Image (cartoon, rainbow, N blue to C red):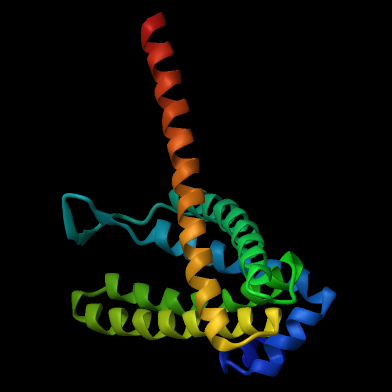
Length: 199
């Protein structure tokens, strides 16, 4: 809890301590899983009608559980890919880090996403939309700052290099996911065409 509070308070020494501690990898992974479970479950539970965004659909526990499990799977994959890319880019800019250190700091930074779940209260009442949007914005900014601090402390270089690393890594990350989505779409299209051809 002390480390989590340090991360939320954006204390640089806490980020440095997490990056250097091999035993912090498992707690970081647990944070990623818990955040993904909560976020996926709430998002799956609180759904709006696609034809009428102002209308809430009836809660469906099964759908929420499935959404939570799928979210955890994708969150873990994204966590590993992002940490590897960040470590690679950071070393390119002279940083002294590795994938494990990036896994630890980025995993702990995900704690901010738990707070962002509060923004989903906006779906309960339209009058809370502004409050939800404001909370989401503030948490998003703090989370971004947390990533920058984490990258800087793990790589042991300047804030400027950390920002550049984050930007380059985000671009590379986007291209990786775009390529993966393209491959999946091509494979899915091929399978569907084969299925259609056989029928």
